[in-house]
Amino acid sequence: MGHWAWENNFGSPVLLIVNMAIAPWRSYLASALKKNRTQPHSRYFQLATVRSDGTPANRTVVFRGFLEDSNKLKIITDARSQKITEIYIRQWGEICWYFTNSREQFRIAGNIIVIDANYENSQLQRARELTWQELSDNARIQFAWAHPGKPRANPEAFSPPQPDENKPLDNFCLLLFEPVKVDYLRLRGEPQNRTLYVLDEKGIWDVVEVNP
Amino acid sequence: MGHWAWENNFGSPVLLIVNMAIAPWRSYLASALKKNRTQPHSRYFQLATVRSDGTPANRTVVFRGFLEDSNKLKIITDARSQKITEIYIRQWGEICWYFTNSREQFRIAGNIIVIDANYENSQLQRARELTWQELSDNARIQFAWAHPGKPRANPEAFSPPQPDENKPLDNFCLLLFEPVKVDYLRLRGEPQNRTLYVLDEKGIWDVVEVNP
Image (tube, rainbow over all chains, first blue to last red):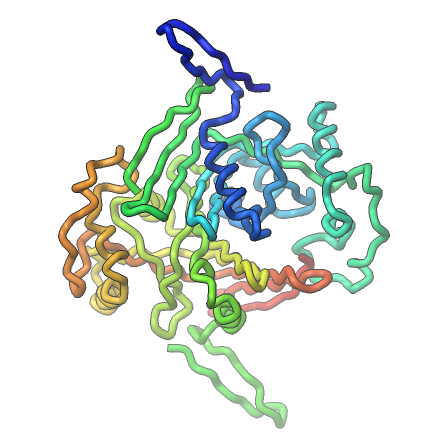
């Protein structure tokens, strides 16, 4: 979707980042994922949303990669979970992603799109299907378990038949998290380094170094 | 502050938890801290609050222990930081504390009290002082650094004289996080186990096992 354009106005090549290009903070995130790749928890982050009563909610979720060539992070959830109710009301969240090995933190604010079974866009329904197909059997079967958050069900409610690996269950939702602001902190360094990336209305990322 | 009472109504000892006693989820948290103690990041958690515009904020902070015999978690922050502005408006937050080694998550919701330099309570001012004294020199000097979040200052702004180790700088704040709800998830286990603890108006913790 994004592309890079080269211009020659000044006699030398100038790199322009065009709307929807890979965001400039992505290379640092990719590097952090690489540096911390031996730790499975490096793909977990904390997602904060706001409840209908105005209080914050915060939980650990798993990073499922980016949507194709976009900057949208993929997260999965159950339509029966509390967070879906919250996100339908306020499509906004803040991710806090701390890499324990390299001591880097990405705070990522942005809006959240819920791709549920009824979402009318064939391309995004296809993305939902692909995400389902990429899950392990173990991850898929949890969508057939008893209703999350309700009083503990009998053991039988946790041993359903294995769902179809090609067709997502109706309660399987893909969340697309579209960043508009990234606060990147590196704790190694004396003093620490901190960079803010803010997406402007033209789709350009403004970058500024700030005090930690 | 809390105490345990034994009664003999049924011919055998019955344990009653009296108002302000150590909360029942504390032993699981203590055990998680012990199991993960080789990892310094096991004392970090993510604190979500709500900004004045109603969007969530989320960042990693360090657990500084409990206030004396209470269930209040201690966190420190800089009066110049963004989160202080948020917390003065809405004294509420949600902690997400994930233990990477033992694969346990504590989601802790509660209200937040800011003990700043002007807070009028000598006992809590004493707690603020003690917390300052327990910091490393390295942690203390950061409160004398340039204003957090402002455009990057010159290197000199990050090499101030070492502050007095006994007397907190004016911008040093102690946050007291008072839990009212804890959602405790253990990912190990098939299916996973999840327990909700909710503080009722009498100060008693209701405990219920729920579906993961």
